[in-house]
Amino acid sequence: MRWWSVLLLVLAIVLVGGAALMVVLDAPVAAPASAALRFPWTMLSAEASTMNECVECHEPDVFHTCETCHDEHGSAALLNVPFDDLIMLSGDFPEPGYVAVNEILPYRDQPGTYVGLLEFLAERGVGDFQTVTLTSRDEGFVTLYRDNLTAGAMLLPHTDGVRFAAEDLHVSTWLKGVWRMILVGSETPLTIDGQATSIGRLLLGPTRSVTVEETEVMLKSETDGQIRRGRTAGRIEGAPVEELAGGADFQALVVRDASGGERTLTAEEARGGLLAQLGSRVTLVLPGRGRSEWIGDVVAIEVQR
Image (cartoon, rainbow, N blue to C red; front, side, top):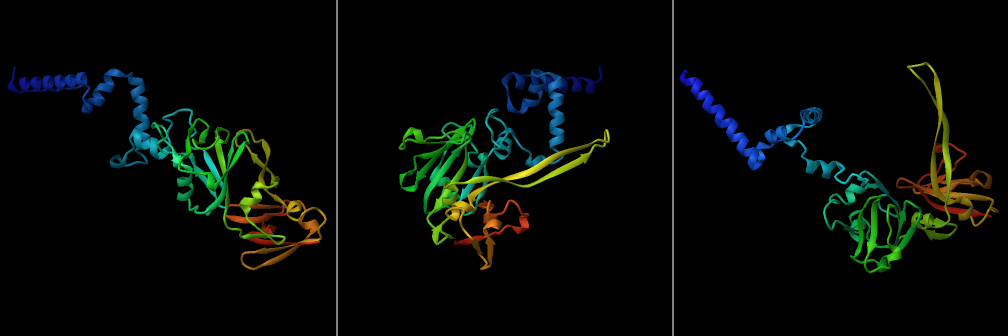
């Protein structure tokens, strides 16, 4: 036997023996070899294919681990927890909109995970306020006054998104499956028939939902040539004009916007309308008219009787 053959044999024995020893000792660097011995090749092949697809978008030096994927993408470490659910922030929030549950509780799979309600509000620019109302998925709600909230008021993980609890509040105020928060601030930037108010206050009063922009859509199938139809629409909630005007017996509304513009609507034109929050704007929605006819950035409504 030639000397180099002996050398190759020795090297092979050392490599195989070393790998076997690391597998036995469960050394981290032996993970690929260990996986090959512990799992079916069909499963490893499928996992490798997934990794190959991932590297089409991710550079190897910044590739995700299981931990970073769970934190950054809300991967289902807890399979029944809706990480990608949203909570609506409405009313007098400085920036109304939506926030992802995973942004509120990014480490929800860790013991003792929670965020203080006051801390959550402060992070979103909420300073002084009067009340915050939490609404659950089953349409239950609780209104909490600022003076009654302490650091013990918490938002915690729940299989239905987020739950609210506070040891220093009665248990009947605790809520599961929170999907919406309505804030009533200390300021009153709206004037309705001479009364100072805000959109947060109006959303806690009598509201109504209307269907807007309903239209029929169609698509011709490239497979069988058939045309199939459907209807699309939107639903908007707000304070009804009749409630704002104190009844149906008004003659007209004078609506002013933030730029100083003024528009007068007859009772017939305004009837059925809603004062709603669309994004960060307070808008007078007129369901029977196109969106271009709606009045945005409303700051005052004067009722003429």
